[in-house]
Image: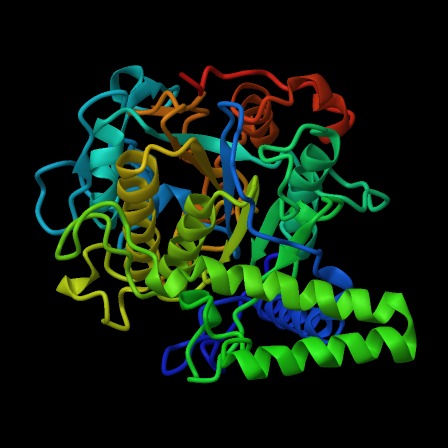
Length: 477
């Protein structure tokens, strides 16, 4: 379902709407689901407490970042020497290294692959200029890009493709749990046996990928008492106050026990306990490992930057969180992807793609410098999107729903510093707006290898990825 749309409306305040109708509707549906979840909050919050001690096996915490809308992977990890890439994107293409403002970032190694269509039979990849903050992680060998990867199904509906990917089974509406949920359900030895909060969805409602997990809680983008995002400050859930105030709340809960029985009171108690845990963690006072002031561990004050900063606080608090799922939308770029160089300013209305990539790269870079390098925590980040975009730019200087896409993996246990691909080449079929990049690496291969080698749950891959036998690609070190 690849509907072209006009530039009317407004998916972003003050900017031209670039997304298709289905993506906008899906975003609204997710918001409404989050609202319903909050009205029923006592039922979904578990009983939690700060652990007195933390002892874990050398297993990773997994952080999934879902780029909702369909990221244009050809604009992020660019096959710049493919002639068909350049001719299909006269306005939004990037040039080879050293070519000026629109030049790709030259990668120090691991940036070529066999190609049936590139000159000399070798495609050369470079990073979009906005990926600059991640060059250090790439040079460190901890950042991996996986090109021509994705969902092995040509369904281009946002709703269907996202669901298939998150449940990790294609075209099966009967599956009601997500891959991360099934991982946690089958991982019988938690990282922290005394902890009771195992998973967090930093999204509008619990992401599908976490469905089926025990002790999983959504933390949507709430508005706190000061009008800011609750994701920037766990201390603003309305439960701080004087001892007398807290005692009054305790008395209210005791009264609920007496008046209504244990079930309702326990739900209320669990809700308060969960929120109190977040207050005790205190993300507002979270300090990254490097002194503040123009360094890579300074988190940007974007929604994604706030979410990763909050994730770092959760991980560093060592309360037993094993999986965190974060949504970052805005990738449905049918219109006005913009000059790749952003005309020198990410605030430019012609900088949609630059702005998206810049936000992602800066937030990931801060998380890497802080929690992975600075604090040395065992963490694996995986970044994915429901599909890629078409090869050719369309008539509104954007790209329509495609097929093959891009994944990232980041962590101390990742064998990075390269672009992993089985590159299918880029067809010269016309019109280029009908040409898709093929999928040659099933995204489940990447997830399954992480589950097996980094999360210690290789014995349950058949349950986590039903009816699929993964091929390990050597992505872990």
